[in-house]
Amino acid sequence: MANTPQAKKRARQNERRFAVNKARRSRIRTYLRRVEEAIASGDQAAAAEALKVAQPELMRGVTKGVFHKNTASRKVSRLSARVKAIGA
Image (cartoon, rainbow, N blue to C red; front, side):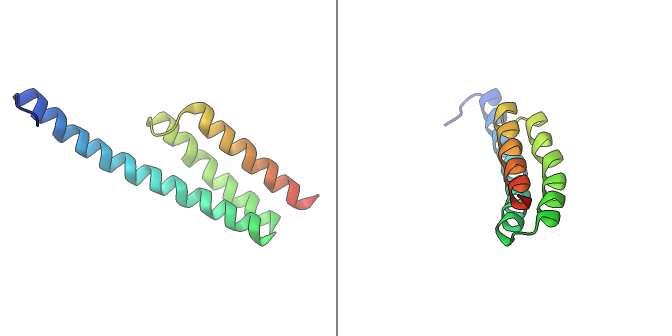
C-alpha cells in the first residue's frame, strides 16, 4: 500500500485515469460493435455510415492514449475492407 503522500496521490490519480480510460474504451467498443452489426446485417450503406462515425472515435482513443496508433489503423483498415466486400 502507498505510504508516502506522493504515492497516495499517484494512487488516486491512477484510479481516476483508469475510470476515464475504461469509459473511453467502452464507448469506442460500442461504435465498433455498431459497425460489426451493420456488416452482419449486410447493409453496406449503414455499415459505411457506422464506420464513418466510428473512425474518428477510434482515432480520438489514440490521441488520448487508450489505443496504439497501429492498432487503431489496423481496426479501421480491416473494417473498411469488410464494408467494401459487402457490395462485391
